[in-house]
Image (cartoon, rainbow, N blue to C red; front, side):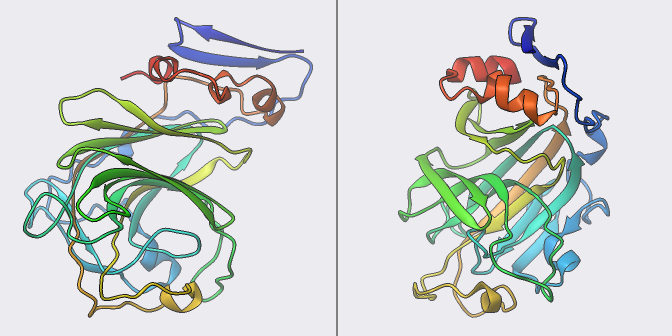
Length: 299
């Protein structure tokens, strides 16, 4: 018999399973040690750079802490993208189990508040490590989710982009959003993952919700930045080549500032046994109203 109950009017969720051997739950240790206010002048050693760890060339045109924008991490990517098997700049920390990660970010152009090119976005990503390096790379191994802000398909129109990638098949949503400083948020609760955004001075909005039956507790969670360039013509992708080369001559106009990033455990708690989650995980209900999700996740 399987059952669930809400505690405190959707404040904390507890799932219990009767008669089933429970999967060993991931830890719910404090995650505040992963926080970064970017108030120094160097990147803290707790961060891992995707390119450095896995043997890829740096796709950053510029990068600093506190120099370009006081009290902020500053990133300027070369032509790149997180889509299908393609990669781009990614700074991450490893998280076991559920998390609620938030960041205050701004994506802009060199001369204005909107990035100059298309597909110029940055924000939060959570990725399942696949054990591959640049040397051992094979296609169809990427699995991750993200929420970003910036400019997507249409030049000059600010949006959020949410994207889920399953074995390197990417499915995305572009939705209008205000430019300037925004707060982005990714919340993982077992096999559910929610992408949220909040305009400066506004309220949280659920921008996307994902459900994936994946029991792996470990994810690489952090900050991404990517941009397109008008100098790079559209054409068939060859990530085996493009992931190992950096086009430093293609003009780009995307600058990303990160004021802070903060990690915590989410308010809802779930039993990680897959049999419980596929049978009675209330947050996985596709008809759950946005107001109910926001109430469960908290402010």
